[in-house]
Length: 56
Image 1 (cartoon, rainbow, N blue to C red):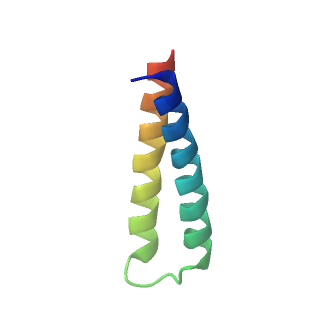
Image 2: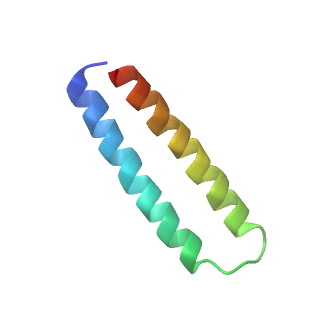
């Protein structure tokens, strides 16, 4: 992957994490909604780690 592509993906990951954090704060604690958001955050954090590792 080119460096520019990695940078774009990293910015998208950061934005997605911010949006998930905001959604987590706003969602009521019913129907396991927070659990699904938390899992999504963990997946995105893993993607960010992979991108950082690829970059070196």
